[in-house]
Length: 165
Image (cartoon, rainbow, N blue to C red; front, side, top):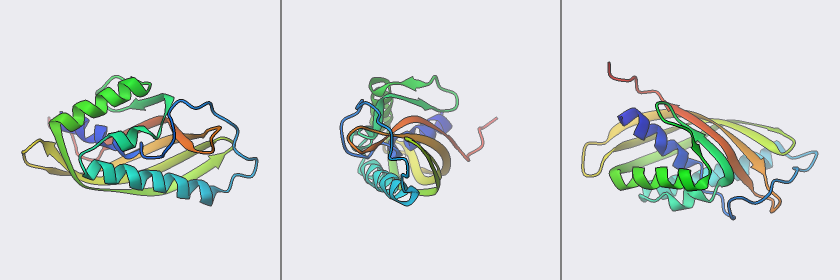
């Protein structure tokens, strides 16, 4: 259970970019500058992590496209912003998240898609309980939107904490 809840925390990481969810996708400029895209993604992550550390998931939700899918081990895929929001709300009702940090390791851009790989560290545990340190790894697919923002369309992550047998 701890493993599943920790990896749910990563999904919050990805949701900080401004703008409304569900905007139609538009093709990125043919020569999208990977450095500019990476900067936008890192800023979105910074905002999401700040929200996580404040005990909030709302800032993080703005980064998901309406058709986003979040996939975590041991759980059914959360499809669409309503399901993702419900999952985040449940997590933040039950869990405390502290000292979260995110590191984007790589961003590959092709057309209107960008694939980010990275890691996240945090301490997480039941409200008022003992917090456990964890490091997560993730792959997130972002899509360029008509309003110029990048939104998450696919998000998959897992923890480095081994399951208890």
